[in-house]
Length: 291
Image 1: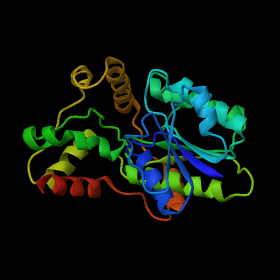
Image 2: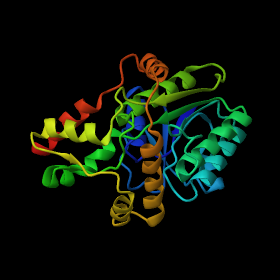
Image 3: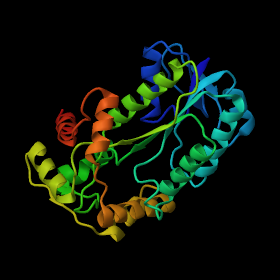
C-alpha cells in the first residue's frame, strides 16, 4: 500500500513528498510531467491529471492514503469531487484534504465555496478524511519584496480587523502528521477538521509596523483600495484569479479571519509545539533579501 500526493510540485505538495520520503514511506507523486519533476529518491512520479478519470483510476490502484491538494482553478470543484469519488471507488482508506479557513462562510469567494462543497461531499459520503483549513499564507508576502524594500509599502489590503495568517511549514507539518496517522491505522479513522492559523491577529497597520522593524526603514500600509489591488493582480494573473483574490480581501476587510483560542490549542496539540509567528518569518525573509 502506498500514499498518493496530488499537487506534488507546488510549495506545499513538494514539501509533503519530501517529508514522507524522508520517513521511508512508499509515495506516488502525481504530476502532469514526470520527466520534468525532481522528486527525492524512492518517490514514484506518476503521470496524471485530476480531470482524467482513467489516469486517476490507474494512479489510485493500491493507494491506502490520499493527500488531496487542488490548486485554485475554474474547474477546481470538478477536479476534487471526481478525485474523491475515484478514491472511494478504489478503496482508499484515508484522505487528507487541503481546504481553506472559513470555507463555509465566505460564500462570495469562489475558491472558498468550491472547497466547502468538497467538504460537504466528504461529510455526506462519510469519507474517512482529515480536513485542513489553512488561513492566508505567510509566504504569500514574499511577493511584496519590491513594494516593501523600494517603496516602503505593505500592499495586501487585509484591512484592520485581523487575519491569523499561517506559515506554509506548519501546513506541511500538519498534513504529514495526519497522513502518517491515517496511513499507520489498521482501519479507516473518523473524520476530523483542523483550522490552521498563526497566533497573531495581523492587520494592515500592524504588518506595516512589523516590516518597519525588521527592515529598519519606514513602511506604511497602502490601504484598502480593492480596485488598485485587483488591477495589480491582473497584471500578473488571469482576471478570474484577480477577482477571486479581491473578493477574499473584501471579506478580510469586512469580517476579519481571527483564530479562536480553541483552534490554536488544537493545532498546537497536533503539531506538538506552538504554530510559527509571522514576526519570525518576516525577520528570516528580510535577512534572506539582504543576503
